[in-house]
Amino acid sequence: MNIYDIAKEANVSIATVSRVVNNKQNISPKTRKRVEAVLQKYNYTPSSIARGLASSSMRMVGLVMQDIRNTHYTSTAYVIEQELRKKGFCCIFCNTDDPDPTEAFKMLRDFRVDGIIIIGSVFMNEKTEQALDTYHPSTKIVFVNGVLNRENVSSIQCDDRYGIEITVEHLISRGHSRILYVSDVDTDSARRKQEGYCNAMNRHFPGYAQQHVFHTTPTGFDGGFNAVEQILASGEAFTAVIFSEDVVALGGVRCLLEHNLRIPQDVAVAGFNNAWVGKLSQYVLTSADSGLSLLGVEAARALCDRLEGIERPDCITLTPKLFIGTTT
Image (cartoon, rainbow, N blue to C red; front, side):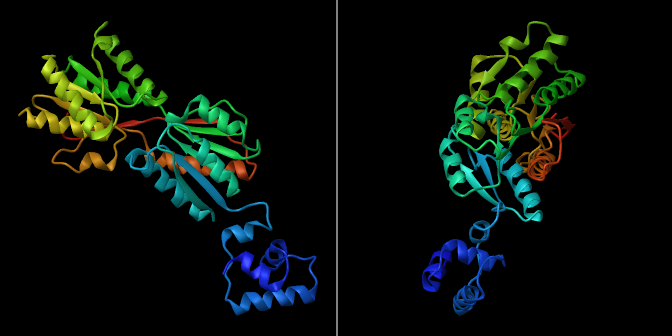
């Protein structure tokens, strides 16, 4: 039994049922009594959609991410959902499978969500801009780890460049000079991290960095494994590797171990994000902590502030800290 069935049996409109459910005025006592009798007959509990039909807020927020299997995205999304639930919001998770959020936005528009939180710099592209053009300009948008110069979009991001720079400095302080960098997907965040590696390495070893950046195929754990396999096959001399993501680093660790290389005695390894996956193996991964939990908290706060009309900066950048594990 839903609101449409209630309206049909009571012989009233859906809007009338919503007014009764939400205890609104401008409805005759006779009609109210008839609707209440049907509601009681079926022990009807209104959904958030039904309640929202009579108000300006559905108390729903859309969370858009490319790959829900990515621990970076899901860890952030989990915190966002927890924070928004405290504020009485229900979250709709949208997995796009590619960097085009158009279909997800269409669905969220049909649900009349109060706001949207986009997770991941992979969505910093023309498709996202075009999709936002079709949305009502009053809809509040928060972009996690990405920036769009639009009036209704707030940004919460990590200083990825600095995170990699402090990782390089840590490895150099441990006596390493032949430090390689393995990048994952081609996103704005990935490019900032690569810039951080090049900046830090060039301060100490001018000209070295540009020739020692490697890219994974495919992404994730397998990508890290394959990248290290290819590096070892090339005969490249190195004593440390920085990976753009923790899960990619774990793939690299597996490959190094299969080649009987000791960590960190033969090769030091570092990742990025300080995600929980970096603590699951026999090694605890050294990693730049991007503050995934704080990103989620700030994203939820930014959206709630926007919805309540509270002034706040258009962009907040969090400074990562280095977590030193057993791999360096």
